[in-house]
Amino acid sequence: QVQLVESGGGLVQPGSSLRLSCAASGGTFNTYSMSWFRQAPGLEREFVAAITRSGGTTYYGGSAEGRFTISRDNAKNTVYLQINALKPEDTAVYYCAATSAAVPSTDSRSYLYWGQGTQVTASS
Image 1 (cartoon, rainbow, N blue to C red):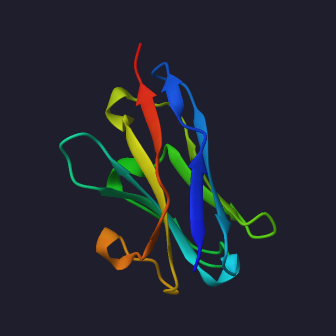
Image 2 (tube, rainbow, N blue to C red; image 1 turned 30 degrees about the vertical axis):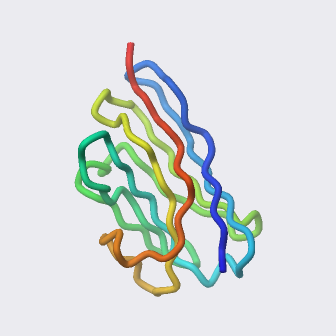
């Protein structure tokens, strides 16, 4: 069973960049596809990005195209989410999730393992 811990969130000015990290432990990291979701107050959890076990394929939700980049370092058991040109509408709690599926789903109900989340706030 894998445990996930996110970090790197914070309060930033619109237009800034952030890199979120998600450190995994307790499992064989390279057997999991990894994803990022986000949830803003009053809204459903939204798929942001996913990456396959080897890192060879990435997927992005519609709101993430162009400004978000997901990557992973299997030697460090860590997945990253780079967010550039932050907008106020990016404000949310960002969660990482793990799945043993080879092709990660965009449906949050498909994921068994979740981190506790990290808050990202883009505000002037």
